[in-house]
Image (cartoon, rainbow, N blue to C red; front, side):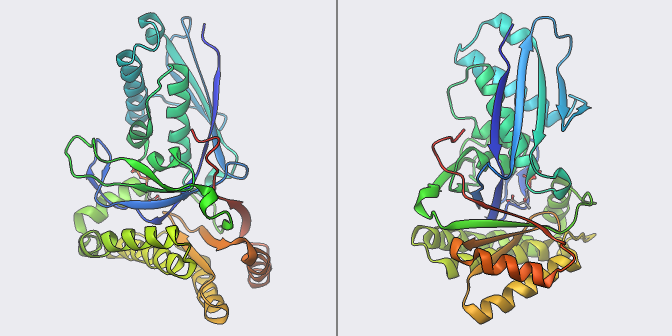
Length: 338
Ligand code: DP6
C-alpha cells in the first residue's frame, strides 16, 4: 500500500502568449512564450494521488466530481511518469502495476477559467512523480497534459522555448528570473465572467493555426523580438516596457482569434471596458499597469505593489456592482518550487 501524496501547484499567466501548435500529439508550440508564476496562497491546484494493489481501475476526481480517466492527456502523463520511474529504477515493477486514484481541486473558481489546466496538470504530474519517486525534471511531461503547464513547474518568470526538433526534446521551460528579482511585482486577477468558454484554447489555437494569416505573421515577425525585449525588460525591471509588450501581445493574440475562420471571441464588453480603463489610467499616471487576457473574459493585471490600492479603488469605482471580483497576488517564490 502506498502513502497518499499531496502536492500544490501554481497558476501561471503568460505575458507572451502560446497560441498554436506545431505538433498536436506532443503538444509542441509554434512560438516561444513567457509567463509569470503566481503565488499559491490565492490561486493553486491541489492534487492527491495514491496507488494500491486492491484498486481495480485508475480513477480521477476533479473538484469533487468523478471524471473519466479515459482522457488521452491524463493517460499520457501517467504513462510517461511510469516510464520515467521504470527507467530510473525508482520503484518496484509490482508497484508500477497497481492502479492509481487521483483527486484534484482548485482553490479558485474553476468557472473563472484562469489557467486551471496549467496548474492542474503541473500538479498531477508532480504528484505522480513524487508517488513513483521520479527524480528528474517533469516539466516536459506536464507539457503533455497541457502546453502551458510546463511553465508552472518554475517560480518567478519563465520562458517556454518552442524548440525545433520533431521529438520535442528542445521544447522546454526555463526560469528567466526568480520571484525575488522583482519582489514588488503583483498580479491582480479580475473575474468578470464565469460562463464556460465556447471554444476551448486547444480547439481555438487549432483553428487559428489552420486559418489565420495574422498568426503566421505573429510567430515570424512579432513574437521572437517581443520575447527578447520582454526578457530584457524583466531583467532590468523596466515596467513600462514590460507592460507595453504584455498588452500588445494579449491584444494580438485576441486579434488572431478574430482573424481565424470561423472566428471566435473570448473577451466580453466588460473585458473591453477594463482595457479602456487601464489605457486611461496609464495616460494619466505613466505606464503603471498591464492587462492580459487568456482564453476567457477575465483580466490579469500586472502592476507594482505601490499601485495596487489606487487600481483596486478605481476598479471598484468603475464597476460599482462589485463585478468583477478581484484577487491580488505576488509571484511564486522559489523555495517551494515543485
Ligand atoms: C491563452 O495550455 O490551455 O492561456 O496545450 O491545448 O492544453 P493546450 O492549451 P493551453 O493554452 C493556453 C493558452 C493561453 C496562453 C498561454 O498560457 O500561453
